[in-house]
Structure formats: structure tokens, C-alpha cells
Image (tube, rainbow, N blue to C red):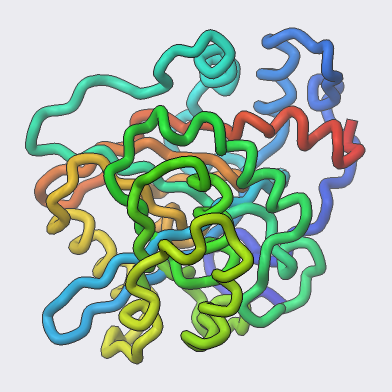
Length: 299
């Protein structure tokens, strides 16, 4: 079962009714209907990972997933999904307000649906399901609009696969970062694979041969617990020289840093102050969110 504590359970089953009528949308639905359907589906879960060895911060990039649950946002208000979809359809930039020069723009991307989410079993270093791969790939045509200068990826396979699928057409560097790894380390799903296993996995992924820092991200770390690991990720992001950074990670990491929940494949656009404080500017839903509802037969 899921560990005790204030978290969204990691075992996600397909949603069951009754659902509000607005949840069911068709390919001919209006933007308003899509927004109502998006608002009716709720939050989710995630992961994070990073490492510090010999005084050097090693970065990670992680994937995103799109699950549908009944848990609502823990704090703040959800960014208007219809506004995001309108921005994509009109070819406009989805970015939030202009930031001061000393404030970084951080995009926290949650991985797509993985095997342990779909089955409710603690699958070792779970991979994405077919649905999860669709969710990640849905970002392919739009992810470049955020202007990330680097993507830090959790070394867990579901995050790595999400990053490679979402950024497959971009030239932005992909770096594994152990501190972006999911919390709840006692679960096998949150234990990284060996470097040999991960390198074999990367060979079948788009841009897999470009993923950097594999050995560093999978090296043993002195970080004592998951909470301190995520705090290390915060320090890594503050210390980076890039002004715009994407992090492919997990629900637990996103919730720890922002106090908010994220649906699978959501991107939380944040401002990161020099002191390490996160402010959520927008919450962007996957462009394929509505299509996934239809294809998965939940309408």
C-alpha cells in the first residue's frame, strides 16, 4: 500500500464516476466545454531526484505523466486551462509575466502515467504506459515555446522517458539530476536503475544518446533523506547560470517546492527568487489532455 503521510497515493486507478457532465468532451466540443472538463478532473502525483558529490551539484531531468484523479489543488488557484489551450491554438506564447533579471523562470514538468500508477503495484523503476507516452509526446510541438535553456531530469525511467519524448524535437541539453528524484525512497518505483540498465533504456528513446550526467546522477549520494534531496534540488536550481530551466520530475518534488499538486503532464511555470523561494505563475495542461480523455474512453 501507499506509505502513510500527507501525500497523494502513488497507486492511481482509472477514474470512476459519477463525474460532472462537463467532464465528457468530444472532438467537436467548444473551448468552454474543454475547460469545464479540465476543471472537473483533479490532481495527481510525481517524483524527484538529485545528487551532490565532492561539492558538485549534478542535474537531472524528468518526465511527465497525465493521470486523472479527484484530489484538488492543495493551495492557490489552477491556471485557466482554456486560456492555455487558446494560446496553443492561436500560436501565442503561453508564458506568464516578465520577471526581474535576478529571478529565474522554472518549468516543473510532471512525468506521464507509469506502470505503477496504472496497476497499483510497486513496479521497480516503472516505465511509462502507452497512455503516459501519449501524454509526454503531446508536448512535442509546444514545449519549445517555453524557451528552456537546459532540462534537468530525474534519473527514474518514467521521468527520463517523458523528457526524451516531450523534448525530442528540441536542441536543449538534457541532464540527469539525482535531486529531482521522487520522494518515498522505500518504494521500489522510486529506486533508480543501475547505469547499465538506464543506458540500455536510453538507446530506444528519442535523443537518448544525448542525455548527460548518467553516471553522476546514479552514483551513491550522501544525501540522508528525500526531504533534504529536494532541498538540494532547490539549491542546484538557484546556483545554475541559466535563466530559464525545465525540470522533469514528480508529484512529490513539485508539491514540496510549490505546495501545489500537478496533474500528470502538467507544467507548473514558476518564478524562483535568489533566496530559493518558488512562486507559481501558471499551470499549463498538456495540449493532448482533452484528446487523452477521448482516447481512454472516459467520455
